[in-house]
Image 1 (cartoon, rainbow, N blue to C red):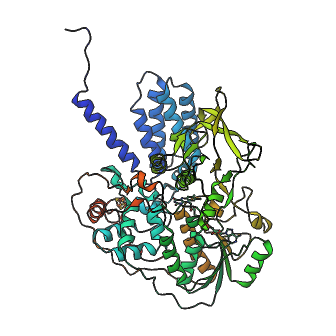
Image 2 (spheres, protein in one colour):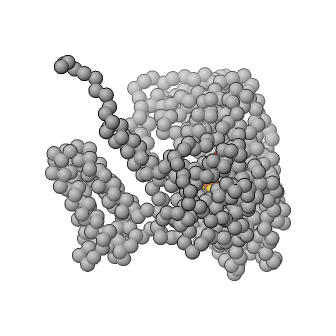
Image 3 (cartoon, rainbow, N blue to C red):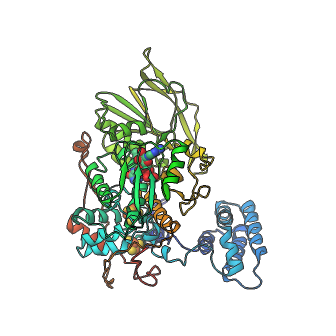
Length: 616
Ligand SMILES: Cc1cc2nc3c(=O)[nH]c(=O)nc-3n(C[C@H](O)[C@H](O)[C@H](O)COP(=O)(O)OP(=O)(O)OC[C@H]3O[C@@H](n4cnc5c(N)ncnc54)[C@H](O)[C@@H]3O)c2cc1C
Ligand code: SF4
Ligand code: SF4
């Protein structure tokens, strides 16, 4: 027998590893509306299973915690709010006395839950049911529940499979008048918990929407309701304002949009670069909205409190959807040098058709979000010879989508992580010469769950450059609304989830100006919500409906297979022009991808209760 030998993985271990992967996918596909107390109990059991059993707090304590949480879930007369207190003290004592991370982290997870969803625990104790709306129909299908506009995803995916593209777009438009914009740029939260993940990978929902809009031909809007004679003013012609205008017009109201800039579209035009969202495709969608008889006053800045008050007097309702267009300053020395720009300023100029030239220049972009990637890639297209993206955290902590980071790198941008800008150096004429950065080291986790960037002991570094573009976030220009007493202390316009501004009767607000910089689909959902609630405020109950029949789901075998990913033009050809970079699916790919959908509208716990929602 040899003294040492090389161990190879045995068959059992290989199978266990694949079971871990199955389990990971199953957890990733957890339904967004699951009872949080039940979920906490399931995770606790999993953690207990990892206990080595050497220390009593972990071995015995976790079991007691499990029993207590089960008691809460089962209900009964012996369960009171005191049971919740016992859960807390038990978890605290396990956390403080367990010998290793297994017991400590398991107890911590329970404590996090007690802080995060205490009302669910209390509801189980008092009413025997979960407080969150898991039974609500809107949460029933994971993808539909996670699309902010609640688009009927299994419906349109099945229509794509049948080749009924026009019907698919009609169905989408019931809830979202920007199917093309979303098909091209939506961050697709709907895919996050797609149940197909249990089998292989989420359905490429955005990609299928793109296939539908690319093949649908012209989709006429539905017939408008009879005129109500009511007038609504919309301040801001971005996706939120335009969405509200679309649905309010369909309901028979007369809408006028007041827009500060030369063109409509908001950040879809003045933010998102045209290589991701071609302007003519955006304009086509805007034209359909305007074809309903929406009036528009361009280059009209409603920035005085008196102007809003006048609109309130002249119109029956007002919708504020002014977005977040003010830029955050870097707050460092030299920021006023020539050549320091904000991402918002640069993209706004381009949106108005004023391309700046960066021919042969070196550009440093500050930030780690999608906007930073957009300006970096745009700088390359404007002729910059070198583009670096300086970020104070690690690349893995960037908020930009991974595909955006990969896209920027493929186009030649360099991502330099763990560098915090400290000052900008200018020449005698005041032109940028370099940016100085302080190297960082990842520290303890902050509130966002990412390691806090901390100054390292390494000396400052100098990056020679001609332009510094700051992409560290946008703010709301809330001054006007402050004067009306409707802006919160964080500078956002204050409105509730129904988009109602409680301090001013007849005034509604939504989109980025309420949430802070978010996404197109969230602002579209706000426009839809505002339209419904303005209609109700005016004393009506108009319904937005669609006459598209979705075929019954068939019981077919759906074996594991690869997800169809979107392709992009080769980086060498796309990096120098503003032509669209993404390529759509082929018919063969779209059919295969659509056929992977599990039709959770029919099968599984998400089945549409009471039938499909054909109106709202
Ligand atoms: C660079 C960049 C890239 C992005 N990429 C994506 C992406 O890939 N996917 C995604 O989903 N989202 C993306 N977003 C975010 C998305 O564009 C916004 O969340 C969305 O446009 C917000 O819509 P909104 O209607 O609330 O506001 P906006 O789109 O900002 O529209 C507000 C409108 O109000 C007008 N306005 C402002 N003040 C006044 C006033 N006083 N009087 C009259 N009019 C006024 C503005 O000119 C503008 O037209 C990106 C944003 C940026 C900046
Ligand atoms: S709009 Fe976005 S979130 Fe909604 S279905 Fe389409 S891709 Fe998904
Ligand atoms: S399998 Fe289909 S219906 Fe189910 S969550 Fe995914 S996209 Fe939605």
